[in-house]
Length: 320
Ligand SMILES: Cc1cc2nc3c(=O)[nH]c(=O)nc-3n(C[C@H](O)[C@H](O)[C@H](O)COP(=O)(O)O)c2cc1C
Image 1 (cartoon, helix red, strand yellow):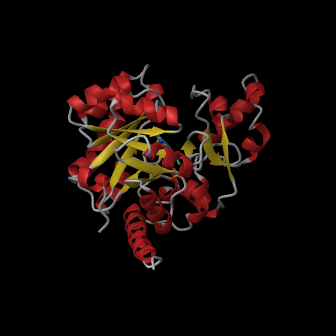
Image 2: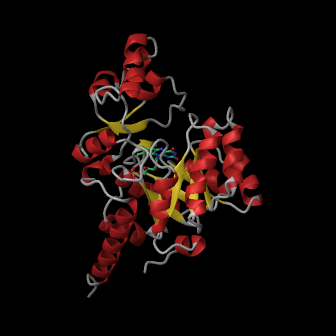
Image 3: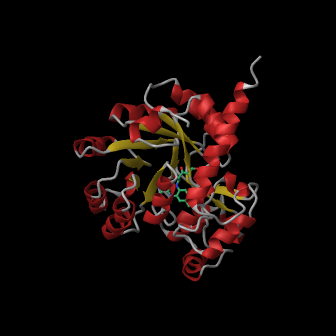
């Protein structure tokens, strides 16, 4: 069994966290990850209701499985109800990402809830450490969904020099070998999102899962175009990594023009409504090329863990 400070802290049997993914990871996906001995998280965006947080959290809670909730800090100024519902749901871990976690750490700790923050730069890591977060995730630019510009490996190495608190690696991890590599590099665990995008327990639909299985890692783009089109006020420093489609090919890099082009913007809004893959965003990371089958998240995490154990044993044989 792989033991790290993360598994000891949260009483896990594998150092795998199922990343919060708004629109994909609800209570069923989180429960499926936790059933494999990892820690599954529920992704919450500003479009969700507080009832969503409550009802999705009840799924792992009623199965007596540990779970976490991931919030986007920049959405909370207008939506304090999401934070309140999260605290009331009593998760083991709350991810406070994409903003300054400082105002939230005290109330979470007072409620007995551990706090994790995804960081995209060294400056973010300093801010999270000063705020008192318990666990950091170095989120590389390879990651699916909204992320920063720095590659995982150098960011992870640099963040590890700053702290003794557990640092988890996120972005592009989809094989046991990669998981083992991150642990050897010093990470306390892995934070996987894209690897779970074709799971039977996800909130994403069959068509999205099929597209995930058919796409290679060459076909993603880190872009603000979809957020501009949908009128979602994501801070500019966090673009989103999505599959390339007709819309991103036409508008990525031309966001300033797109703001004023109502017809083009409507293509994305309508595309989301009708499920049109040429225009709707499908957020996924560079590891998408490794996702080739529809499976239970429990099996994905179990296989990742078994393969990481094999890789770690093989690594010791490199010596001498
Ligand atoms: C579809 C999708 C939705 C995401 N939604 C969220 C979210 O709601 N909150 C969050 O903190 N991160 C979100 N992320 C980022 C993940 O938490 C994580 O950093 C990322 O998936 C890790 O990289 P990987 O996709 O290469 O495994 C999302 C990622 C994806 C792919």
